[in-house]
Image (cartoon, rainbow, N blue to C red; front, side):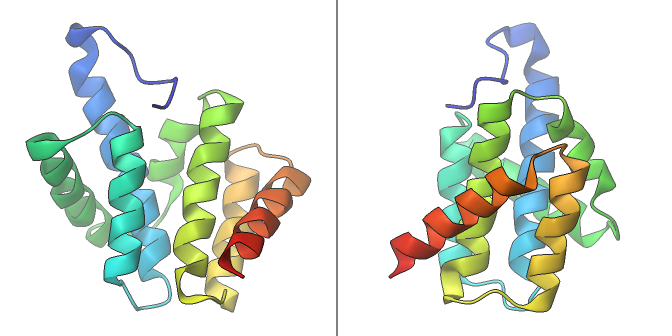
Length: 141
């Protein structure tokens, strides 16, 4: 489970908003090559389960995230939520993004550009993001 989610039930709305925005970012990455596949949807579901979502909450989060993503033309709103979280959680999200991108065994120019932009927006070291990318590529072989 991601460490940035709060355990306090009073903060549930905030956690739900965070999960929706993270899911929207993952969905955006999946759709950027105009081919939103079942394989990518499964990676997104698994990431959300790692966030602690399941059952009805998982389905609701995905539905809300798809709606949010389709009504948004920029990723800044999605990344604001992730910017302040701990480094390990950011790495897990980046790993999920690379899994989505390489789910079809290749990365196109739009996907590569997205990850380059996200590296800066999330205040991540590009070497760390590159290492995560290589790890995912090696697992695909």
